Amino acid sequence: MTGYILKPFFDRVEILSDGANYLPDGTVVDIREKVKTSPILPLAVVGSGSVPVIDVLSDMIFVAAKVTESVDDTLAILAESLSAIRAKGFAGDSPARMAIGAISETRGPLTLFFSTFEDEAAAPFELHDRPFGFGQGEYPPPEEMVAAGWSHSAPLAEYGPFLFEYMRARKRQNPAYPDAELIYSIGGHLDLTVVRSDGYERRLLLTWPDVVGERIDPNPPEDTGVPFDDGSMFSDGTGWA
Image (cartoon, rainbow, N blue to C red; front, side, top):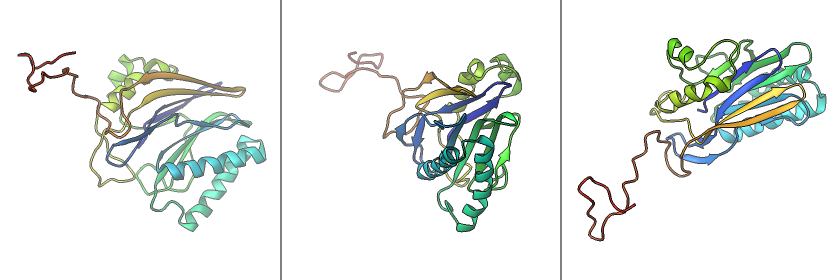
């Protein structure tokens, strides 16, 4: 599933996300910005799992934002709606996990998440508040994070690229499909989205050479050039550049 990190600060919420959409076996089907932002309110969402389900849930959240023009009211509607969605069996065979970064009218910057499937993180179809931030992925040992620039107050741009390079280099389990094979699942590019009360900022931090139609591969073979007409190469294994 998508790797992402959400971190609240006193005046903003920062979100990191990779950009690759892929099949369960890691084959890339699309590369895009995954963090979606409301044009009405300082509220952004990012999802992992089934893309159609993510799109439907995102649209539902943004419709509530448009109608209420309030982050607090939007989250209240979402919390009530999740139990109704669970009762109807929505997304039962298409799991997703959604994370939200927003600037509340009463609480300031906040981060939350919910899932549509059973896992060890938290109960499904419930909106979970994470006041210190929320992330999905595999992180290096604490001493490596500190060496890379991590601290409680450091912006995500200072150490985020290191974390995502670390995650990209490791095969991971999809929490929605725990019995499936491990795959490389961080790809496309790394985006930073900053949510403030008066708007958004987006920055591209990294780009990776992943190709639509191929599996994510953090260690692709080097281009050895074009062989001779008979298929042979130079003695060092290379061909014409």
